[in-house]
Length: 539
Image 1 (spheres, one colour):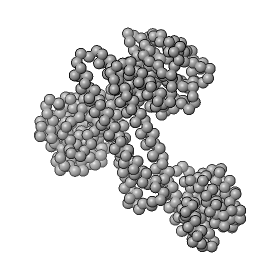
Image 2: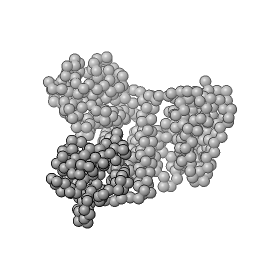
Image 3: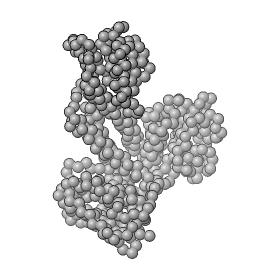
Image 4: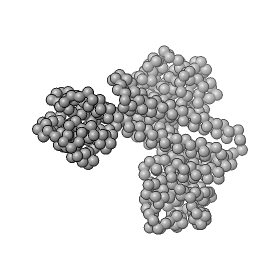
């Protein structure tokens, strides 16, 4: 909550209003008063109050009637009823209509303040949980949209079918009807599909876009989105067929993969409800990424001679999508269930139960964050856009910053750290290297039994610092020592009952280490544990 919490007091006793206003203001509340139900109603319509203290007996209306008006205007307000004449009927009627508490005059100040504090604490929790739910629902909508688009465009390896299906999904999920896709062929951009455009507009746009010609080519060359809030007066012959007399917004999304641009997706809207907001740009960029992968797969299929290799790629991607869907939905289900429980207005949980629900939300929100971070990291690595911020530091300092995370991961294992005091400093991105160590320890936990040892060791030679993470797990067959560092690859030896994961952890490790100019490898035999080692150049 920002600023002071506000309270409205409605009572026809002017002396009481002055006293209660002074008491509450001394407790750092913002206080307004009203001597009648009508004036109180006007105040409620003017602004939101966190709490309202209402007298049962008012000169122009019954207090319970004002209570109903109050809750109609602000359903989340904490309403406290006051009476100078105790009545069981009034108390029951007030509480049934939604009052938080029913107090008798003369008021005990400490009791009133305690009731207000409890009511506002409950209100804060409800509002915070509602905000969390809205954010989760927004993220869930984006995630489900990307999964749906990915599954739709991955159902076929026919290039034209992928383009047509992609544009149809853009219209369905964003509400933006006019869209198009250009793909790069023979040093120019060629229109491959449109949606929501007239035949005349499509025909006019079918002319190939030559090198260094206009905004669409610039998007392709720079591999960065370009958003134009109003291109009505813009001079660009490639966008001219799309223009109308009314205000229009344009969004151009590059289709690029592994640092290579393959085309451009464009969307146009004249509806102010569909302007290029940050959420729209994020969603369109994600959709563009899925389209790019599907288009690239189709292009590779056309050029490939081995159907078996393509089938393996398709199976790996299908499994990856299934795993990501599962990894996202599991924590989302826990978060939604916990938040829904806390939002029940007719149930008051004890503190330990409330803490349990909040800890569940916090834990699974962290799980979602890590998964999204992994996906974003993989996207940066594929685009060769990983930013490495180097500084001179010691490996022991890196481990110290992630010690809590390592301790949490190895709570059922014995973690041993052996870093020599005289190990030289190295010029690295300490956050990225900390992520590598965390991923390797997490991998060791995943593939080894409880109560076994996990060791982190380091040594140096003239050229490199050599760091290793060793476990006593199930081991890795020699024939897949290289494959385990490929994206989406899944091992088969994880402990029973553990979620399978996305197969990105080791691929991310390799990308980070190679960005530092180092190497990463594994030494292992089945049933003999595994030793993952990486090098970091000293110079």
